[in-house]
Length: 116
Image 1 (cartoon, one colour):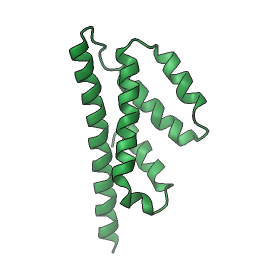
Image 2 (cartoon, one colour; image 1 turned 180 degrees about the vertical axis):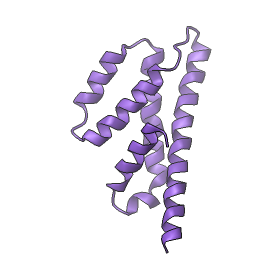
Image 3 (cartoon, one colour; image 1 turned 45 degrees about the horizontal axis):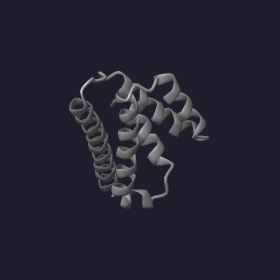
């Protein structure tokens, strides 16, 4: 399991059981976060500045680690010079994070059904 996914799973465990039924909302928020991070990356904001903003905005250490993992992943991706490629990079990053989230909830659902 990849590190960011593992952090996300651990974070979800701390949610109430209603989180499973709200997976669409959680995954949507997750993908919007990813979109903002990659948009900052493509617009040339420094990684240090994005990390500083993320650090100031969360008191939750696990959530902070999760956000930082997305920042690292985004800044490990290329920065493009053309608007079209920047938009594609932002959309791809957003959709990949949404897909990861959906897969996590599928694993959680399967695990719960196997326990019953």
